[in-house]
Structures are given as structure tokens and as C-alpha cells.
Amino acid sequence: MKPMPKTLKALTWFTVAMFVAALYMVFIYAPREAVMGDVQRVFYFHVSSLWVGMLAFLITAVAGGIFLASGKHSWDQVALASVEIGVVFTLGGTIAGAVWARPIWNTWWTWDPRLVTTTIMELIYVAYLMLRQGIDDPDRRARFAAVYGIVGAISVPITFLSIRLYRSIHPVVVGSGDPTATGSFDMTTRMTQAFMFSLLTFTFVYGSLLWHRLRLQRLNEKVELLKIKLLSD
Amino acid sequence: MFFDTGPADTFNYMLLGYAVILVPIALLILSIFTRFRQLKRDLVMLEEMDA
Image (cartoon, rainbow over all chains, first blue to last red):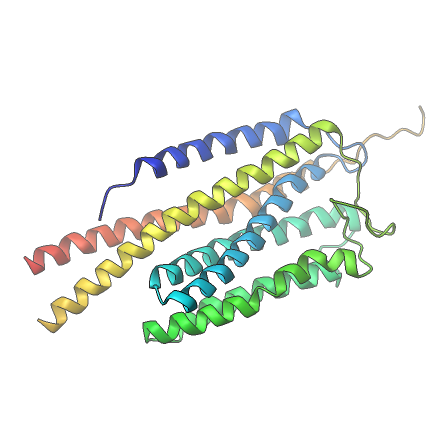
């Protein structure tokens, strides 16, 4: 296995630095919200986590499509790596949303369109991972997963647009939303800066993790091929 | 002045919220690192057997 590329090392350290800066902006630079108090600060990483989740699932669909078109298994590896990251970030973001909801909506959970569609999206991609485990043949597994990943990606725009299409208690960050939404707040300049920086940081986190996870996948395949070779000798 | 109660005390919820975001990410990083290390060990062993 080749040593870690210098670009990846630089990217990793740069991402760590950005993350530290994001923590500073979120906890110190951004002011405390006047009504909700400190729990509002969860917003910065809550939205960023779910952004990474949606981005990851869209990348999975694109990678799956390229795999189906080209037949190159490296794209299947990208799809798998992206789903694994997306599932983790979506889970964290969803539960963080519930933690924020408890003091603001006075409930951990409500059958709101945004919450329901996000959960469905998460479960779709958990099932993606389970589907892959159930198929032994690598070619068949990659093809099934690619088709599933593409179809499953329909859940991403549905989740994003749910608060704009349906009556929802969930606040809308960009644009105007339902006036009955609870938990909305006007962002100050510093809050907006912290929010944008968090989004950018999490995008870099996703990119770094994807590259590392891909290297892991390639090492795994190398080990598997060597095992097969030794068994056949 | 008498009715200004200030922002709600939600500090503990903030801590919990960040914990549920950061812990899974940390576990994912740890998982990638651990799996990588194990596979490298496997690769070295297999290459010795193949030699």
C-alpha cells in the first residue's frame, strides 16, 4: 500500500485547523441567541451534519451512475465510502435536532415532514449497507447498490424541500418558511459567518473522510485479492 | 426591566447536542483508523506467506 499522499496529509491537517476554527466561531465568536440561549448553537453543526449527509447520498448516486456507465469498480468504492460517511453524519444531525427540539418544541420528536423525511432518508441508506452485505458476487453487488443508491437519492430533494412544500414546525434557514414554525431566529452577521464557516468546514471534513475511507477500501480489496491468490495456490 | 428574564438556560442541551454530533464522527474516524491498521497487518502477513 502506498504511503499517504502528501495532498491528503495537507488536506487532513487543513481540515483539522478549520474544525478548530469552526469550534471557536460557534462557541465564542457567534453571540448567544436572545431567546433560546445556548442550545441555539447546536444549529451550526446540526445543519452542517445534515448537509454532509445529503451531499454524501447525492455523491453516492452520481458514483453509482458512473459505475453503471463505465463498469469501473473504483466508482462503486466511492459510492460505498460516501454512504458510510453520510449515514453517520445524518444520524448525528438528526439526533442533535431532537436535542435542540426538546427545550424549544417541548418534545424530543414530532411527526413533522422534515423529521420524517430525514429519518426515511437515513433508513434508506442504512438499508443500502445491509443490501451490500447480503450479496456475495462483487459485480452483482455493485450493480444492485448503484441502482439502489440512485433511486434512494430521490429522498434527498424530498427531504430538503419538505419544509417548503408542506406545513412544518421546522424553521427554514434559507428563504421564507411557514410563519407557524417554532425555533426560527434572525441571524446576526456573526451567526451567519459562523454558520457559513461551519458548512464549509464540514464539507472539507467530508472530503477528507471520503479520501481516507477510499484508501481503506482499496487496501481491503488488495488484501482480499491476495487471500484469494494464496487460497488458489 | 422587571419582565426581562433573558435567554433560556439551555447550556446542558447544547453540550448534549454537540456530543451526539461529535461522538459518531469520532467513532467513524476511529473505525477507519483501526480497520486500516488491521488491514496493513494482514497485508504484511499475507505478503510474507506469498513470498
